[in-house]
Length: 223
View 1 (tube, rainbow, N blue to C red):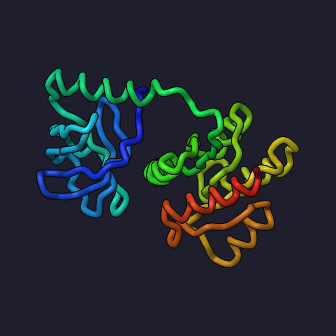
View 2: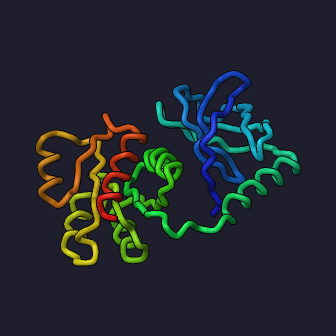
């Protein structure tokens, strides 16, 4: 699996289209942009590494309207490959900050996880991701997690079952759980809160910045 580091900078596509680079790996870049291109489109992408601009060719690997695009680098010259690798290594070799709070995002939509992870990390919060309920429970048993952001509508083991499992275990019972769901009817909200959710946030009205603000508020109340 390729190392992935946060980029969090304005990038340029095809010389004029502005987007936000969310994360970078040796194989590609994920960007948030209001304009998506067809799958397979070849693009020219410019971003900064070590304070200097770098222009690379890329291909659209996947796209989610209004959320972002995954871009795969193509035919990079060796010096660009080395520059990208050096940048990634410089970011991943920094010593971990022991005081960082750790949050888990549980959502079967990778684009949603990635977009919100980017803001949380930029705000100084350590993030782990789970693509479903079973993975979430496995990570809870292995990691020291201070707060959970939980989707409800997931296959196999949904958010309600994760909540129920957490509230039954003494070691997880007090962990704040922010339900973050596209299902936000009064019945959905009541059911989640009755199952043990700390707060209910609608995906339709909660931006990454607002979600991060709510996370920081609940983490500070635990300190």
